[in-house]
Length: 379
Image (cartoon, rainbow, N blue to C red):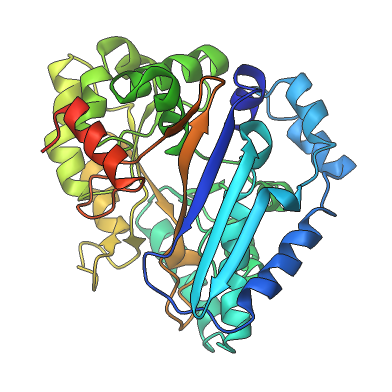
């Protein structure tokens, strides 16, 4: 996304907001400690080794990589406040620069929280990682580490990638640093922020369509997994025409029920279009865990092994597993997100929203949410 935004939307100014879904109380002084971490991030830079590794990614343009090698975080783009246990964070600036804050900032919030509250790793945390890798390999699953944002620590995620790197079926990680360190393939899709931001240019009715158009024009078929649930999957499928359904390698399920998504939405959609599904990727990435065979999991987690076993018969499933890899260490993970709330492409600031497949997870200005629902005829 950073490359696409850099080349196509260099003048866009956007704003993000931290959303504490779990209502976690942050300890006294947390904002000051977080600000210190943010200030230190301006010292980070792309090393020569990392730059040479980035150049091995064939679909990235040299012009972007040359700019990125000199990129530095600007702490003035981040405003952090705390009132009692309530934490407030806003990020604002040019999109092509501020796009890099969300993921490492969330990882920092999570690790700092557990450090300041004195929470410790369980004695068996490393064995859990190994056991999950063995189980996924045993069942011939395919999976990716998606665990940066809500990890217990960088050290835990590092161990996830180190331990899983030699396992057959482990496709790689969404963490570029760890992909470079361990010689893994970097994997990911575009995020909700892309159609959210483009809704400020094209409106919510056209945002999905224009996202797919810009993405496919820019990457020419590479990085070909679409994200359907920014304005609900049903709305996305209205624009997922035969052209784009054939062009994109597949889709990522990130909210709602994964079985409902596959059985009642994406697979029937391909069938209606006359598109064989055997080579279509379905990346499951919402609240996934790992258990034997078809065993049920506690809470809202879905057993990825069961999903893989079922859908490998008709498609190419893949598990984008996050918190269950990088924060299954004996503590309660934070339930938080950072979402875009407005975008300005030169014609005034427009509130942007996300309409999840999960009830109660819509984000954005309430009036803008209601307007988007009316435009899209969502009840």
